[in-house]
Image (cartoon, rainbow, N blue to C red):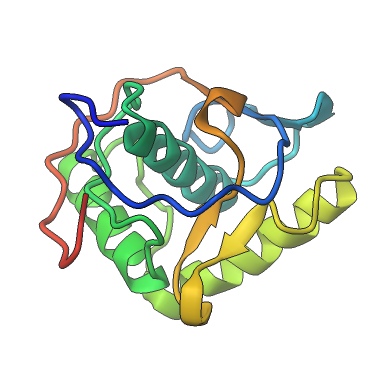
Length: 167
């Protein structure tokens, strides 16, 4: 389906029907919550919350639903794509992301993805919820966009960087 906000893309079938809900903000002392299929986990650290917020916003954008901020990412963003987006977020919202990802590169993002997989496993999600893309490159939340929700407590401004192959 093509909409005004999302170009027509060949989206691979989703591997799960898990529901993912994020709520909270990025300030160090404030709570951040994730629920997967209703199983709440409220001790999500800031870096994991940011990466999950990016993946949820990305999934919403690809489906034509309004994301909380634009991502400009390809269908399966690589760790480097996500790291570049985090750098743009930090530059454009320094007060919001102060002290988060002081050193950001693709290895830091890959490390957080590993933590997210561990969290999803603890919450009983389908093992393919955090899907690795074709040729083992890139990531996405492999669930239909109607199963994604996000409630951010602060407004994020972002003019996303132009990435090759971006949607």
